[in-house]
Image 1 (cartoon, rainbow, N blue to C red):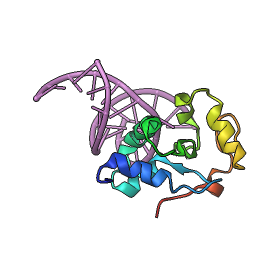
Image 2 (cartoon, helix red, strand yellow; image 1 turned 180 degrees about the horizontal axis):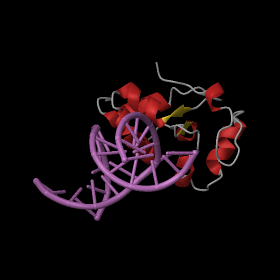
Image 3 (spheres, rainbow, N blue to C red; image 1 turned 60 degrees about the vertical axis):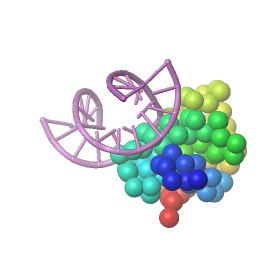
Length: 105
DNA sequence: TTAGTGACTGTAG
DNA sequence: GCTACAGCCACTA
C-alpha cells in the first residue's frame, strides 16, 4: 500500500536513475507537502528496515550536501556510492548538482 | 494518549 | 550574506 507520505517516499526514491540524485524538497513537493521534507529524510532513515533496497544515498538536501551520510554506517559510505555512479563529490557536496539533478515527474 | 523528535525548506529580519 | 523561526507528517517512548 502506498497511501501515506511515508510510502510514497520509498516509491520515488527507487525511481531515481543511477548516476542522478534528487532533493528532499523535490520529493516532498511531488507528494504534496514541500514543508514535509524532514519526513522524507526520516523515511529514508527507516529505509534500512524496508525489504526493498532504497537508494537513499541519491537523496541530498537542496544545497547538494550529503546530510544523509550521518545515518550511514560510515560517513564516507554515501560519498563512495555516489562517486561509484559517476557523481563528483567535493567536501561531501555534489559539484555538478544541477547537472545530475533528477526530479519526480 | 500525549509529547517529543527528525537525513529540510522557505520566509523574514 | 547569515541567523532565526515556523510548518510539514509519521514514528517512538
